Every structure is written in structure tokens, then in C-alpha cells.
Image (tube, rainbow, N blue to C red; front, side, top):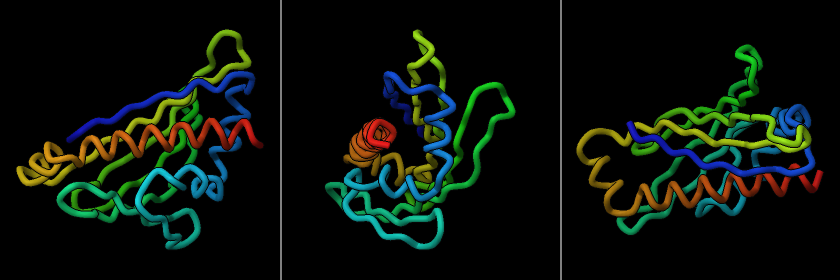
Length: 147
């Protein structure tokens, strides 16, 4: 299991407002745009993207699941799918000082699929996933600030 995390600070927007924006599945297409090689809608709240690497372009599915407010924080859960990209992703929101700032963290747990998955990670898959996830967090910041 590989773990990926990346953060972005959204200044001037409260946590609940960011959660409202992230809780709308339609906004997730904006989050994915430009982060990956291609983007195709496969249904409401579900997309297929391509992850281009040196060896091969891999498809990855991104499916909005649900919003979780039970643990005191705020999270939006997403399922990831694909041969080397199967796993879970969640967006976690925390209030920062001042209280009008929100820290958004993308956390992904991905099962690369055994020994060949580890080889794929070493040959560029990990770097490409990290780049895509950083772009996604920046897209959240831009999307929230632009309304």
C-alpha cells in the first residue's frame, strides 16, 4: 500500500464553505481537469482519467462516494480504481488561524498490485501520481476561490 498526501491552504474561506463546494460531485470534474493525461465522464460523480508514465499510460477511475462529518472534522471520500491505482482517496478539511482559512489535505491509499506495482512505482508511476494529486489540490483552491 502506497500513501500519498498533499495540502493546500485556502485563505479567506471557512471550512464549511469549502466542504459545501467539495460536496458537490459536479465540482470534481474541475478538480480532475488538467491533472491527468485525459478525462472522461463515466456517469454521475464518476470519471476515468489516464495516468501517463514512461512505460505505459494507465487508466484510473475516480468515483465520488460520500461526505463524512461524523468525526468532528470534514471529509469527502472518493474511490480510486485501476490495475495499479486501486484504492481510496479522501479530502480532509481543517480550520486554520485565522478561522477564515482552511487547510485542505488530499490523502490517498493506493494498492499498486504486488511486486510489479512496486516496479511501476519506481519507474515513474509514483512521481506522476504525486504530480497529479498536487495539481488536483491546486484545482480545489482555484475552484473554491472562483466560486
